Length: 296
Image 1 (tube, rainbow, N blue to C red):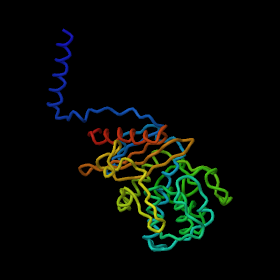
Image 2 (image 1 turned 120 degrees about the horizontal axis):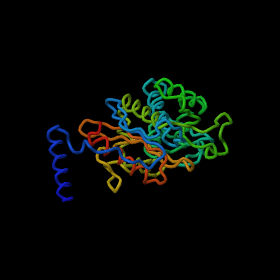
Image 3 (image 1 turned 90 degrees about the vertical axis):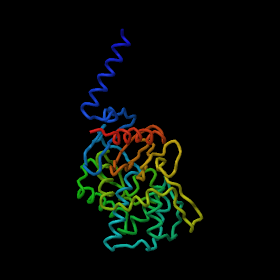
Image 4 (image 1 turned 180 degrees about the horizontal axis):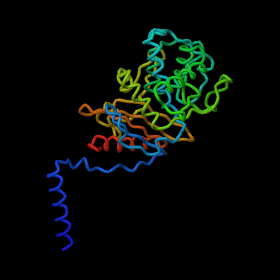
């Protein structure tokens, strides 16, 4: 009898779906997210499809380099610098910690090479070198970062203190005294920043979607830190993913701002604060699946 009622209920539910013209995959519930915060946005409509602690501040680490990338691209467009400019690496830039290209003081690389390595590999020394090349000092560059944050509508909860997102202890012994404090960002603001970058500079995806960047001058190949790229393959690859930025901080955990497009629909996801490197991609997959399922 119980089986009969169960089958009858399932049949009635199916008939209701057919009658209303609702696709079954549109009935997918919001996924449970194992992270400190997460946000999912439909980029075209700007609709927030999911918001889990999206207004909480967190140390975003390398994700904050999205603002660095934005300012570099604007500086090129405005004619302040060019992609072919040679950038001199300072002592400070050569001594920052975290992910790096192991640049040496006095070494010269083009803006284009440094930009690509920031976008693909999240190299901190390259980010500092670009900041100093554009503004003279990183401190002045940080002022531009915060001004731009206000201009594009980010909240006061998001504050940049350096061009890399590094904590003070990883900035190295040559850190200028005016560079102090911890960069903080909310998942909502990270989503807005990514949307502004993609809307105004969609060409960033040609860079962020590269599997690796060849640094012939240094005889190195730097692999993309985004394991979800559809071109990479593997267990975390996601069809339609072509960016965008990873980050890691030993206190706040692993982070990822991702974007994917299917059938003309582009999503932007933010996952902040997973316990493992892989976890940020696992949780992002949940968000993408939910967004592409037709969820409203």
